[in-house]
Image (cartoon, rainbow, N blue to C red; front, top):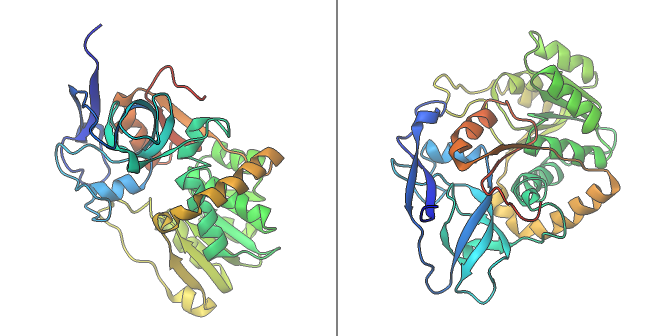
Length: 339
């Protein structure tokens, strides 16, 4: 067996439009030695998230700039291999923004401990992590659905949308999802227990949504932008609330355009974008609520897993085009603990 290395996924070039697998390259390098206050980690799980596309497109609020040779950013669950910080010992499971690499050396301040007794450790990247918190914050703070109101969630089978809809349902709302193929729509209704789901591929999406929302749309949790958002805007009820979470249908699109905002004027709707990064201090409260709902059967989740860090670009592309069901993950370590 050869000497262990840190294998990382770096940008071969900055993607133009939708990222392709040849926009990435694998780099093997010696494993680093942690200094004072640092940890050597072994990555177990990598999270695939839409915000990584924003980083590749040049967004400036993610720290490291996207450039050829840069390690792709991303959250991961890892095992501590060596520690020079009193808060962690070898064998601890941690989560943080450690990038697409197998053996990163990071500041101990960059990670947090994961309670492996609470749930499978992969959930720290999904339902009990940033996607779950995003869904909760957006629905509770921005959407604010009242009992009996109609809520529409785009990308309803995804990591954020699936939780957002269940949060709204647990608040007493009627929830309509928008997803891709019939299998996803069945999952949204049968497993996630939305009241209805329509396919964004329906040739008359507006009419399909209107049938499921006869009284209009009181809350729209927008993960996608694009034609779905155009269709929902035409159905907004008076004083509707729009929680703008993401625009995955428009990331990297050369023909992206603005939406017709006249329906918002007519309905006196409120549109508010939000960021989970400003709400990370609420993660413990979300985990308490989510764990209780999971125990009660009021919150379910699904993970879409591929194995091997070399497949991270493939998994990322599948997530961006909606070919995943639930939280998109890459299992990096074969002997992943806490699973």
